[in-house]
Image 1 (tube, rainbow, N blue to C red):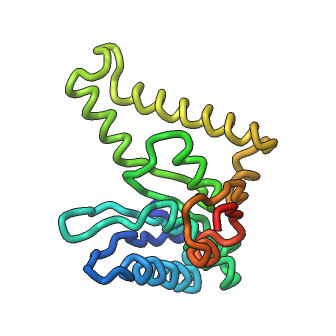
Image 2 (image 1 turned 90 degrees about the horizontal axis):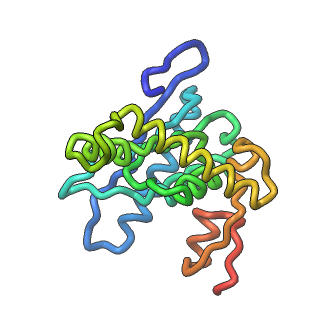
Length: 193
């Protein structure tokens, strides 16, 4: 996907890393910068944006993938640009069904859980899985399990397709500041004030 550049389909990878400082506002500044960069990419004609947290090290930390996804999704809606672009999340965070459900529910059209794949590769190499399971089989089983889990989560909400689930925001926020909800998780209900 990263190398697609055919006709009107162009891809742009945006880093969702930031340099944490002692300044308590550095995460918020990084999220706002990511949103502006996403809007600029759409205005430049990119139709797929990859939000990537690859490159984490001692200096750079990742913006939490759900925060990055939802913030960009809502920023692009407010700017009138969301329907012109697909969002792909490339993150080391997602590994459970609910992680994928939240990312898709807040606007991701696709998720690349690169660290989960690397973990499976390591498990096969280290003998953490039976010898009969290859890396390809392990990845196939992981994808199958996540897909089945996503369908189960969506069906419990009365949604029959992942496309209908994408961006549906059928979740409730717990423990988030109302200002953060309004800015980054717009329209998400919260019973806790």
